[in-house]
Length: 332
Image (cartoon, rainbow, N blue to C red; front, side, top):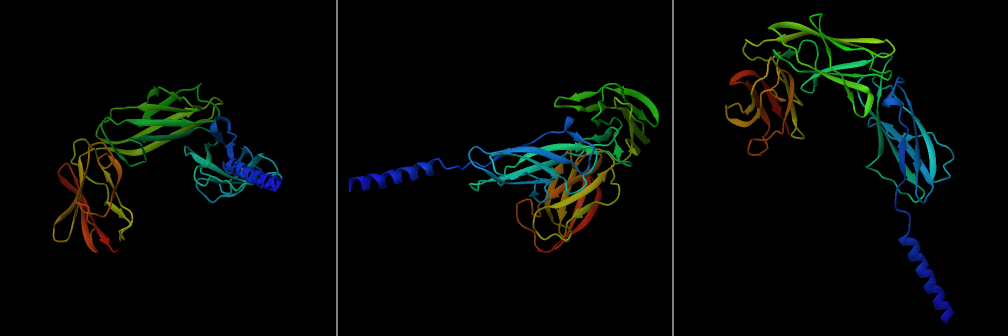
């Protein structure tokens, strides 16, 4: 009888021990990086390693840029360490655009991290340097309004090196200067430079060019940059709102293009002329900067009350002047 009790007690202890030390940790995984985190293949194959502390890995899935997870290419899946590869199912956009691959692994104890996926970010580049020109964090495009003394940031990436040749700037096709290149601390294939020219009223073009260490040159030009220092503030085209009609879910996005920096107030009125909401944007900041601006409105009054179904008027007031207006319909 004592032996039987002892045997049962031992079984209980062992079961508790196994339960206490059961594998509850999901597998870990990592991608093997490309050189300089760049590839010239727009349907790249990524490789990596998945490991688990105690259990066998039973599933490895990957995705790129938030797409659907699909199975990676693996071996027999009979150990706690597995190599995998994954080819992008779609062609990725080339340029100064970060693409992100993620991996999700499951082990034989059914452990899987469904939120914090291991990830790796990289660029898809061509045979020549990739260049983008921004101002105030927004990409500059032909036809944008700019200040008399605009501040441009030029970013260049290449997997062939950018140390031999200068980064050159031109205004109206006239060479201005070699820009000071700043190498990214984390990636030797990325450089940035600031350019602060002084412009006159009128229309101008900006051009920069960069040659990689193998002699391949890229030129990036934006034309029709408009300087209107002496003129009153104005909007280029009409302001736009989306979604319109608005169903009360999420925010309304309102966009407009200012001819120059200004202090802006976005005001919402009903058809009786009652002001319901007002949002202010400072000179030079998003909402009040020269060029493209996009702001949001939550569909509520200043006091936080939901607006009912109906048609509302919104005004873009720049430096005290109504520069543009539009209509927004709410249908809940």
